[in-house]
Amino acid sequence: MEIPFAESWKIKMVEPIRKSTREEREQWIKEAHYNVFQLKSEQVYIDLITDSGTNAMSDRQWAAMMMGDESYAGARSFFRLKDTIKQLTGFDYVIPTHQGRAAENVLFSYLVKEGDIVPGNSHFDTTKGHIEGRKATALDCTVDEAKDTQLEVPFKGNVDPAKLEKALAEHANKIPFIIVTITNNTAGGQPVSMQNLREVRAIADKYNKPVVFDSARFAENAYFIKTREEGYKDKTIKEIVKEMFSLADGMTMSAKKDAVVNMGGFIATRRQDWYDGAKGYCVQFEGYLTYGGMNGRDMEALATGLDENTEFDNLETRIKQVEYLAKRLDEFGIPYQRPAGGHAIFVDADKVLTNVPKEEFPAQTLTIELYLEAGIRGCEIGYILADRDPVTRENRFNGLDLLRLAIPRRVYTNNHMDVIAVALKNVYDRRNEINHGVRIKWEAPLMRHFTVQLERI
Ligand code: F0G
Image (cartoon, rainbow, N blue to C red; front, side):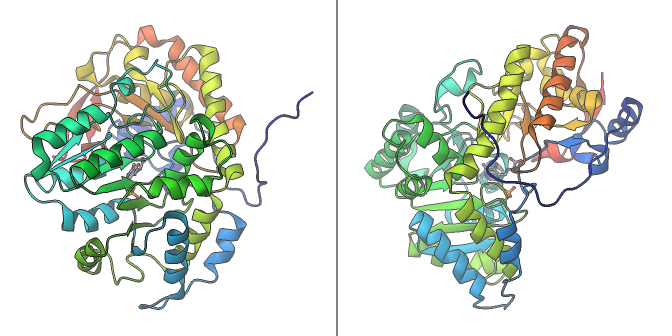
């Protein structure tokens, strides 16, 4: 018999979690205005709201924290981080920031001007926010395949070269750079192929434009290149990562994902002009250039995490757990963005709650139902998150409406995955009785999903 697959680590420390009753949850979600961001974590049994900053660090990372150099200027921990980033990406210049959106804020303060257009593949909401907040436009050039959740293609996160070329042909003078998000979170944690990164680079070179990678889940992307793309199966993750970044001018990084830490981020680039242009904003918004919003110990844990999570075994354990959950959902016929993404399963709420009209936010409704069923907190990546069109102020109903079940790294076991799958099946089985969703009582003008207040219809 073949020996089954198991995790490439064992557990050294645990944190108790607690179940609740349906009655308690009814009360709590009402008090939270039917917005799961407003729940207290004690009110949650299995927390899948994000894989960001919710990871379990390794013993090596905790050990590294004891070596943190907390000097204000010139900390040894910064130089260790900088060297690690240089080895992985080839980028010489590093600006630390407290998280990913801070990296966007610092870099875009230098690069994005009013009236600009920034093409890319499904910009993440903070990325879009930092572009639109500067009165510029985030132009989505993702492949159309990403919109068909049932289509099984290996690199659904790709940029559509034809759309990108068109954008450049029409607006070259307004485009400061192209941004490629690896993996493509909003399209379902879907990877971008090396071939596609090469195509983007070629188009960028033709129009003499730089390329930025939003790299939050770059290591998971490299895993998919290794396991799905021809010519990469015998390359190490670190070799693939190096090749990926050779195709970019710079990166923004939320270290809270693939660097397996709880807080942190950075900008890295090969361009001295970007470094010189952006560094003043780091000092202004984040802190001095050798800590940029992080403790010395955080930079140590980050450096160790980057090294560990660019090893195959660690990534394989992670991605196989997401696949395991996907297989359980397949047993029950629950539709999700196929194939399973790197960090999460994205359930296609439009296909589940077919009686709930778009205007009543099906994915948000499904999020609430799953919480009520078993205390599992997913998160809507759909019409609420999409915000309103900045010009017309209409809701944007043209994208996907998904319930994201994000899996924190090294936190839950496959028994938890079974609980999630069965809870979702129970909701799925009574989907035809769910005829109404929610309506918005109050919303913020930008990034409304964090604070929106809803009521049930
Ligand atoms: N880019 C991507 C692709 C992201 O997924 C995120 C965050 C960011 C940038 C911003 O980074 O949170 O460190 O400021 N995504 C989290 C999520 C919040 O739940 O997907 P941050």
